[in-house]
Length: 149
Length: 102
Image 1 (cartoon, each protein chain N blue to C red):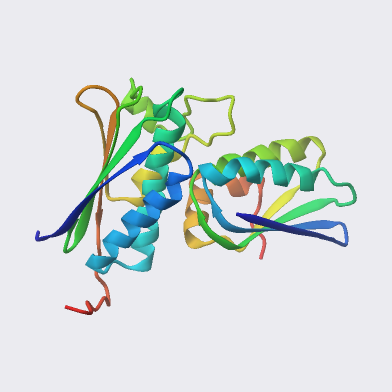
Image 2: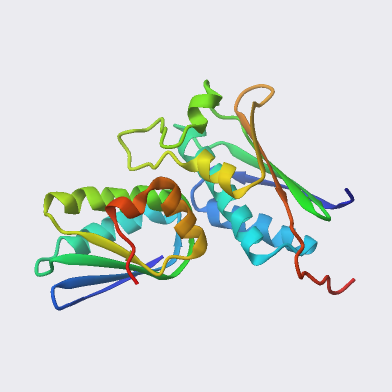
C-alpha cells in the first residue's frame, strides 16, 4: 500500500463550504485514477459528513472542521474531525432514518449513505470533544490508465 | 441551484439543476413550495436530469414536499435521476411515495 499523497483542509462549519469541501477532496483523489463512480461516491460521503458538522456538531456558533486525506495507489482514507457537541450513542446515530432533529425536514440517512458509498466507516470521539468520522474507499482500477507519469 | 417549471395539460413539470445539498436546501424548499402552491395542475413531475449532485439532504427536501402535496391529493413523480441519486432513493424507499417514471 503505497502512500501517494496527503492533505489537510481546515474550514469553518458553514453550509456554503460543503460544496467546496466535497469538490476539493474529490479533486485530490483524482491523482489515484479512481473511476467517475468512485469519485461521486467519495463526494457524496464527504458531503454527508460535512453536513453533519454544519447541522449537528455546532448548534450555536459554527466551529471548525478538519478534513484529513491520505491517498494510496488503490484506496483513500478520509477523516473528518470537529470539536462540536459529539454523538452520545454511535449505534443509534448510524441507524437509518434516525435524526436528532425530527422537527426539521431531515432524512436521517447521513451515516447510512456514508456506509453504503464507502467501504469502511468508523465513528470515534475526538480527543477533547467532538466527533471523528473515518472513512475508507478502495479503488477497483478497472480500465484505468494512469497518464502524466 | 436553479428550478425551472411549466404547466402542461394538468401536469406541473419541475426541472432541478445544479447541486442540492444543505446549503441549497433552504432556497429549494421555499421555491418549490411557491411553485407547488400555484393552482391548475393535478400531478407533479420532478425532472432530475440536470441535477449535478445530491446528498441525503435532498431526500428531506423531497419528503417534505410530498407531505404538503399529500394533503392536496396531488401525486409527485420523479424522472431521470442520476445513478447516485437513485441509490439514495432506493435506500430510503422514496419511490414508494414518489414513483419513478420514464
